[in-house]
Length: 203
Image 1 (cartoon, rainbow, N blue to C red):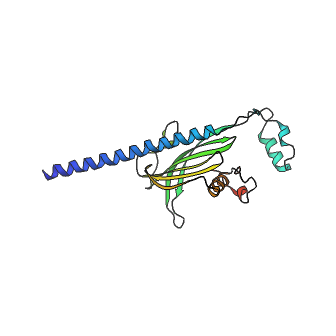
Image 2 (cartoon, rainbow, N blue to C red):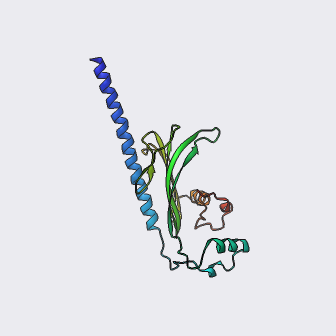
Image 3 (cartoon, rainbow, N blue to C red):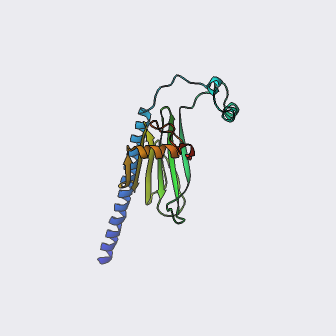
């Protein structure tokens, strides 16, 4: 009898964990959808649909030569791009704690903005990627979910455990907008010549 009770409790515990992880995934997907919708809503129309060499006038010679080498006349202008990443993330600033992650990123050029959604596993191991329209997730398991975004001039950083328990939630401060935009290589609307922005590292 006791053995049956223990088995039942174990089954209930497993079902509870699976339910929590599934709900966390659903919640994270909802956040991803909301972020991407905000990003698309912030887009501005453009009358420039193709590259014109006249746009290079006044640029420094090395920059001008680079664009002349990689662009061609009447080449369509890139207005948005979707990226996928997979790799390892060091979860510690003092030790080597590399954890596998998968992520997607939506970037728009006008007005400049992006949303980076990542899933960082808490335990070492490889990830099997599962695709859907809003993000890339790995096999079920404990994970940190991260949203790093720059939308309509506003910086957004949201980190959660299992997609449910908030760890960090920041939004709307000038410092955050500056840090995220510079880190991504985008220049904040409010500070186009902010020192240090040229040192941003693109993902």
